[in-house]
Every structure is written in C-alpha cells, then in structure tokens.
Length: 191
Image (cartoon, rainbow, N blue to C red; front, top):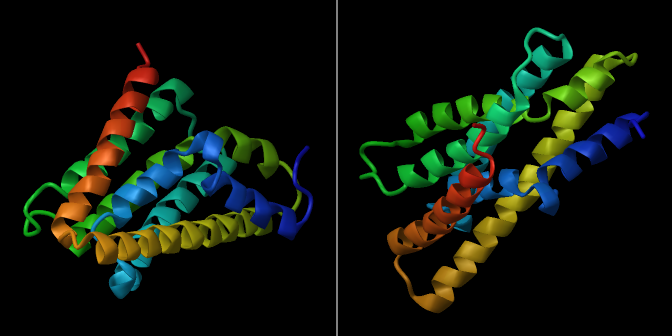
C-alpha cells in the first residue's frame, strides 16, 4: 500500500534507512561513523547529512524520471561504497580528511538513492510529489540521526570499558564493515 500522508512518508523514510532486512544503509553508517564517538558527534552527523543530500538529489532525479539504471548493478555498487568507505579508515588520516570524506559520502548517497529510485518513480505520479519526497527525506534523516547516535553511544561505551585506543576501535568497526560488504558484493555480483 502506498503512503498517503506527510507522516506516512516520514515513517517510510525512517523505515527505509533502519530496515534490518535491508541493512546496507546501517552498514554504510557504521563505516562512516567508525572513527567517531559522542565527543565528535557533529562531524559524524555532517557526513550522514552529506549522504542524505546525495540520496535526495538522486531521488528527485528518479521521481522526475531523468534516469533509469539496471538495479542489479546498483545492488552491486551499494556494498562497494560501504567497502570503499571502510577501507578509507585504514589510510593515513592525511589521505582522507573530513572535507574529502564529506564529498565521498555525498557521491555515495547518489548511488544508494538509486537503489530506491523505482519506488520513488511509482509514487512520483501522485499529487504532492515534492512534499512527499521532502517528508520521505526528513524520515531518512531522522532515522540516520538515531542510527548514528546509537553507533556513537556504542563506540563511546565500548572504548570506555575496553580501554582500546580510538584508532584500533576505528579499524575494528571498519573491519566488520569490510567483511560484511565483501559478502554482499559476492552475493550481488551482477554477471
């Protein structure tokens, strides 16, 4: 059943980003948030918002039917974005600074948005497309904020009790994201 109200679209956006059955968004956010704790929550949220902006731009273009992509390739490239994000944390920090990481999250948001473009085309024919898309993106951002804060709280608590150094913790979380994304890449191989 298609959403009908602003609130329905907000809820759909939250569900889209926090769906455990389609955990690729949460895995991407884990990879993005790996170097952060509650102390630097603002940096993590800026990166998550860059992802939402890219995601939103793609959804607008999809709703206007400006492009169509083979979904098999999109489902393959989504875990590639997770892998590349996580691998970025293994580089010396001078190689991938906050500004470069912002642009990377924005571009990867474009790719993740393509994964939902078929649904957006379906609802774009409804009246109030712009308002519906705004509500959906608001839901995505709210869901991301909850996930990011959960990851940051978990990281802060884990670092406190484990006495592990932050750089080692970043590599542990990135390693988890790398392993799961590699499994998803193999599962979604388009050829």
